[in-house]
Length: 352
Image 1 (tube, helix red, strand yellow):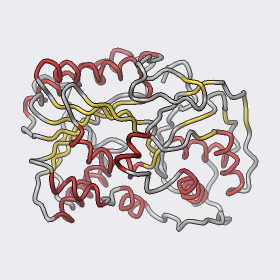
Image 2 (cartoon, rainbow, N blue to C red):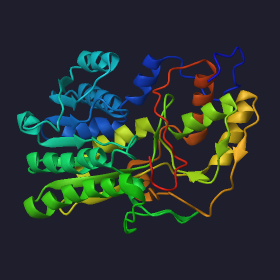
Image 3 (cartoon, helix red, strand yellow):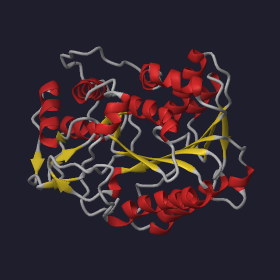
Image 4 (cartoon, rainbow, N blue to C red):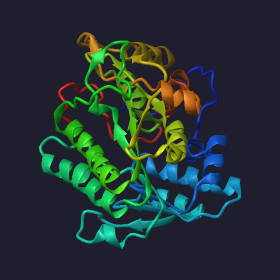
């Protein structure tokens, strides 16, 4: 990526200047989250608290409990934590456990908890290491579902389990799964592990079908903005995408325990728009003073989720797609940090 630029886009929104400001915004609890944390019965265990979304979700939970005036133990579990994430969690009183949950007996050693946020998963690098993908996404989910079969579980899933649909006819929660490729198949397998315990042990589960969380350091919006800034060709074959602000994802997930049920409930979580990739790139071009380079032609289908029930219950995202584009454009042009995790959103063969 080119270095910092002295040219700044003309923004309508106030830019986000630092990682600290970004994390504070991503973890700012909504009134709904504060109310949910006030009413939640018992402690909260977050499996996968060190991933892309987990740290800010854990921070939001802790901040919401503080605002609600309730004392609740919040425990984050992950195989890896960045030093910065661990420090932020510790500052807010979140306990952290670092462990490989695939190791024999590791799951049994975790503390009991009536509320479990399940965020574990593997996507990138799945092709060529399919056995590992299935181990993480399916076997590990089975271990967790069995260990916490008496808990309420919000289980992160993916819109990748749906088939491609014609533009404007996005998949709903009633659309039968039809996963493309082994990664998507393993995501459905993960759901089936929780389904098994829901049907056989009465475990209350919410399948949280997400596509796709975005913030300033990663996500589809960041990927497209980076390509425009660098002059890299943008494949528009996957011509339409769903994106949703990660702060909204955190807020909805933390309110999701109230929806957990047996048999499992399902919730699509996405932004209200089906966003044209070409339009997004052109918007970045206008902000950055660049001319986007395109290749391919838009296919008549795309991976799309209709999240209308989510919006009806929880409202719309705090930041819409155009706001996020402006934030990301400014961030990229100033040389802001990246998580270095491209989404490969353009993939249509299911190989990640």
